[in-house]
Image 1: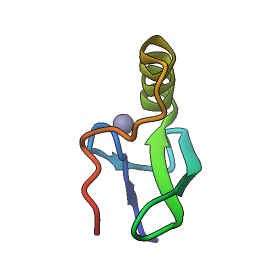
Image 2: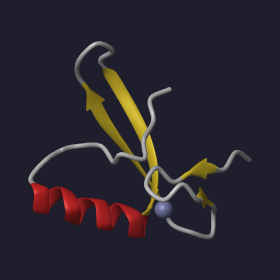
Image 3: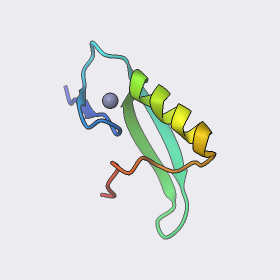
Length: 65
Ligand SMILES: [Zn+2]
């Protein structure tokens, strides 16, 4: 089994923890769909931040492949 890495905190997302998979549509030079794996607690924190900032920005921890 391949463990996913949390996009936000960088820790592995194990089966014991709740994993959340989200897809965001990218625009720009390489349009497409990016899939993120997050702990539910991390996603909640990210959602909160996004709402406060009013932006759809991807977390800075994300590095393009
Ligand atoms: Zn996390």
